[in-house]
Length: 251
Image (cartoon, rainbow, N blue to C red):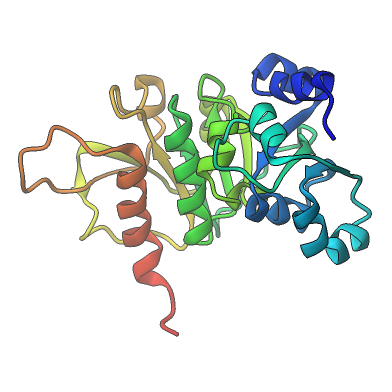
């Protein structure tokens, strides 16, 4: 069972400075833990109930996962989710890699996204539309924040996400850079290339002025009612459906 010291250590990884120091982040819940075990991420250790171990013994053995028994109350004490009654995994943060943006694929770029729930939702949206790469500005919320991991519902295990100098990446990119802007072209009429970068800004301030100058196209979701703005996750989903979804081959 989990000692007080282990519970304290796991809880400490909720803070970014400790995640960076230990190069580990927390994944909670049976489904999400299994998603990461089966991904390209490296799972350092799993703490779980006897029931979780029995149900997943084959995959734990196949992947050579270090496993330690824990009670439900201990998982709730150690983690962020009160609903977690199965397992917590400590997963290694990937090493910093060279960023390559392919002009024939869609990439999401996020400027100053501070709400972890929004970032987690956008990761999930990217996964839904087959977008395998997200680049976020260095002043955005950490992708390995427990709230982001939770909101992504396992999609973080499949979508590559990197914190970068957006202005540098966008300035060197030769393809289409599409930005969401209230004064842009109607997204329903816009005809995109087969790939490119979709840049979304913060809900309160939009895209930063220095990045506005790097856009090749501006698009908007036309407003019919009186709402002042859309949640950035909702707006991302609508735009992805029009840029990517409508061009998907029918099954």
